[in-house]
Image (cartoon, rainbow, N blue to C red):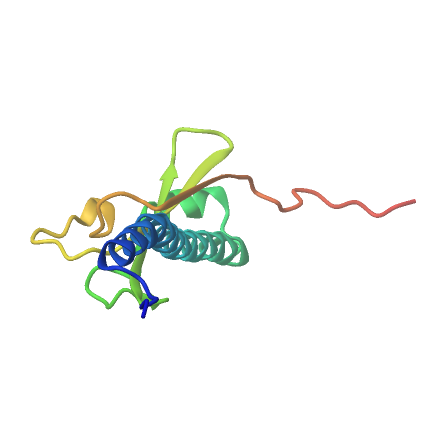
Length: 147
């Protein structure tokens, strides 16, 4: 009587082929998770930078007032950072005073645990996003009635 079935060698070869095919799939899966997280952080940082620029625009600062206020970090270093999408963020606004029209740079920093916080960088290492805009006074200096 002949027994049918797989031999031990056939099973080992099948498992080896499955393992070789499974490795690229696992690499693709881990890479997609990393890409999704990176994209989420980049989108969050970009939206925070845009929000800060819109906030600045809505304050109706003149160039003179903006030069007086100067560089700021939001929220200030003595307050809790912004918490969004399971991360903490700080926003730094730099006013380049010697340019006309006035240049305003907004950088967003993800906060990482660091033994030495750096006030120049809002505690983070490098900005994830930096947006730059030119600022010009948008008010009328003279108004005349139409004849």
